[in-house]
Image 1 (cartoon, rainbow, N blue to C red):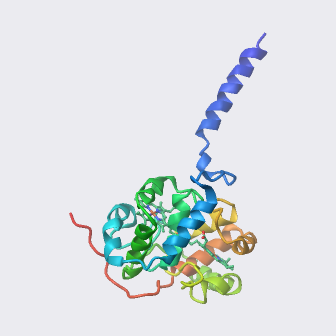
Image 2: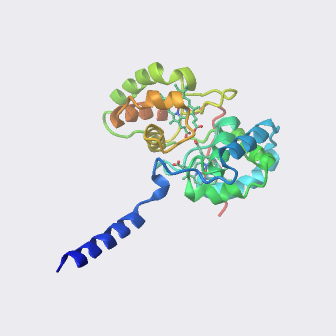
Image 3: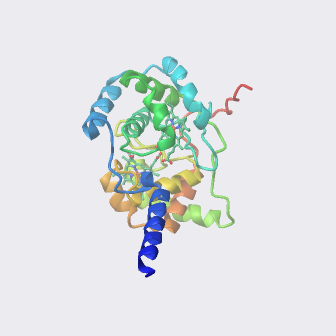
Length: 242
Ligand code: HEC
Ligand code: HEC
């Protein structure tokens, strides 16, 4: 009888496939925050209530700069976002979400857990917000760039500018992120993640709007946003010490 061995082989293969599947990318992955989403909210409220001292935050940023760069530019290939110029309110939201696994970023989780308390979180956010805007973000580079950017401009004005504002500068008081001057590939990935349910703490009204768009339209919006300058003071990138 060959049914039993076949069945066993199938079971083993399924087990291997199951292990290879990256669970952290599953949209229904449940948050395992100690204390749950309520604790994330509580920590965020405390951090937002802090004044935020950029001078103190500079020390805490040293560990972040390994990936996000000393300048806060991140990586042009979009694997790591540009942080410089982002609103402190948005940074605090994302840091607390990532600390609590509400937004799942396994590579960064341990580093933001090292921030000791809400004051540390507010300080590092204040430091990042104070950075000048480093040039050279990753942009859309193919030959149809002009057509894409103009299509993206129209889609953005119609569907996204209510919250992210007319040139993607966001809104600090409301916690709407700056999108202008972010890396093209990072923007595309985040839009897809938001649409497909991987960023569970994303604004539900935005999720409804983004769901209408296929990858092609999202790429056009990202091409437009990546072609803009991040608001704030422009600067030359700070060179990492060698
Ligand atoms: C090991 C590399 C690494 C380190 C170290 C790191 N990050 Fe990140 N960070 C990332 C990556 C990768 C992402 C994007 C994750 C994704 O694609 O969803 C990210 C995303 C973020 C975001 C979200 C940005 C946005 O636009 O939504 C913030 C805020 C952030 N990091 C802050 C920090 C801070 C503060 C530190 C230091 C305490 C830090 N990071 C350390 C890799 C890192
Ligand atoms: C109802 C207000 C609202 C609308 C409309 C909206 N957004 Fe957002 N968007 C937000 C908020 C709030 C966040 C922060 C989400 C979070 O906390 O994770 C965000 C985050 C994002 C991010 C992630 C930024 C980052 O740095 O990680 C992208 C990309 C984005 N939005 C693109 C879009 C696009 C494209 C549209 C239009 C198709 C759109 N949004 C429409 C409110 C909105």
